[in-house]
Length: 162
Image (cartoon, rainbow, N blue to C red; front, side):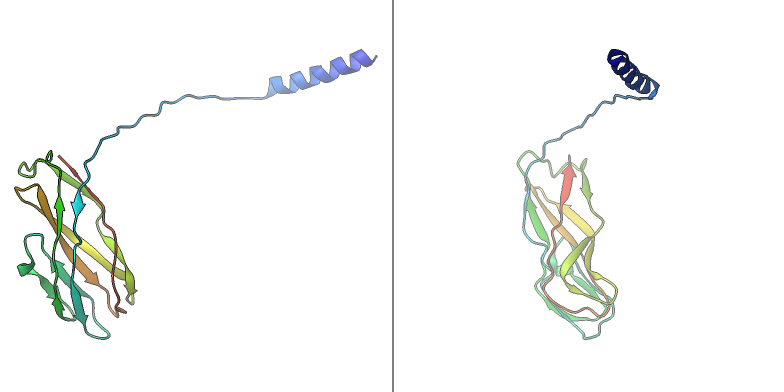
């Protein structure tokens, strides 16, 4: 009797598993890995900016072509300094050939001060390549209304494809 009871318990377990549904699938994983050369860059330096208290939105643009063309708008009364970033590429990168493209973010949010609506940002990044394996990078610093002042910092990453 005991044998029949154990046998019937095993049959019930097997029957329960036999009624269960199961699914399986397979897929492939793949990746394209490209090697990049390290590029060293100086800071994109907007210098020291003097801004009216209770300011309206303001901008300071450092062009890639040179610091003599700096433009300011809004409530910036004056500024000192200001220099585009300068990046040095490896000797294998052809800065003369214009068959390259840049992968980058649309803007950079900076830490170190706040305004009524947001943090200061850098937008409208421009790049100028010269013939000496170097590039100069400029951009526009956007200062929001009612900015609190302070030292602004941020890190920007870009990739140049040749």
